[in-house]
Length: 515
View 1 (cartoon, helix red, strand yellow):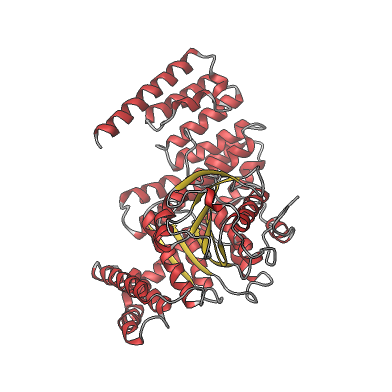
View 2 (tube, rainbow, N blue to C red; view 1 turned 90 degrees about the vertical axis):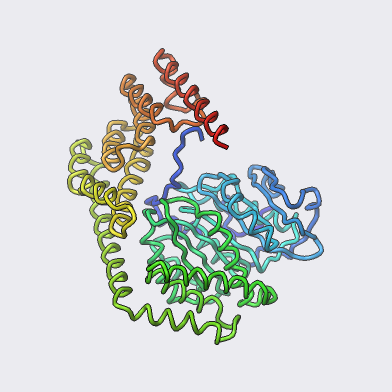
């Protein structure tokens, strides 16, 4: 029995024919049904007592769709006699326990149910995500005492994108979203979809690493949401395209609790309001004292927006006055102008790279196109800029350009041509190597593509490069990976696998000794 309706999102996502995201993980050892409003019935709890509380259940087979599975967390206080908020966690590679580990403690503290799918994905068709969310929604209604006015969606990269149309179709049920490293589909056009502004607005908590190739996109989304009736908050962290750190995951849940109070979805907890306001005000003061005026101005302004109507005006005065003062300052205006210049440079870089990628995919001489691409994009110059002063805004902007070039050439083109045209895939990888010469992932992909092309010695050389990096934690995968296992008859392959095992054992022993 299907729990949701079909059709709307499929039409929307059909326009997204060019994939944009990759979750950043190096794979080394490691009928349609669209959620829609009106499909959710009153929640009933029929067998939740079979699950333990206060502990993560690693794998649950869905009763709504046995082809689907998820990890589950019920807070220690869970009681089917009352209803509980539910957050659906959607990792773009189906690694259910990754986001579960980030959000579990906050869910315990606030009394949220977490359901984290093993079947969500990015960089492919939308249907697997529809099916996965459908199964989680169905089980929510059959098994748990859920507050169907307080459902939350949480995704990273491509699954963050898909959360937007899902939330629209679940209008009146989705109270908020957490989106990491990815905004709405089609560059924010999703915000103008029919029904977005007519429905009960939901809150959005966004996050991005400061070297994420989608960093500028997340800044643009944050500014854009100011034009819509959508409460929003953006937090930035040090790092590339990846899930947000645990402390910021917990902050996201804290922030959504504040928004639930403002929306009348839960009683106002004055003690919690005071605790969070005091903590976040002190963080804004620390940014101010550290000489980070733009970050401080944004933190003060966010406090005013987040806590208006929850704390007395007198308590907001310091934050409001200091935000106004900083926003008028010459230094902040210069930093905002610098940010705009970086955004323009990234847009220009992306357009130029897109043109080269189109040519790389179609040219009869992909190796020549790759050489031209490396020169035209000035990858060596950008890499030097990124390495010279990694703590400056200019260096971070350069790192984001490197990440953009690397992601597109290490993943998308090789994925599309590894079987049909491996020489074209290798040309793409030469650009990835120019962007990140020391990356173990380049060695790994070169080994796979060369193996596919029948270049045995080149594949073994690349595999040796990978082994020498020490990046392999689980050497057994070398013998089962679809392309690398084609090398298994080679004596050198067996030697490299044994060397990788020895290095992995030494590394594990060293970690154990180091505590």
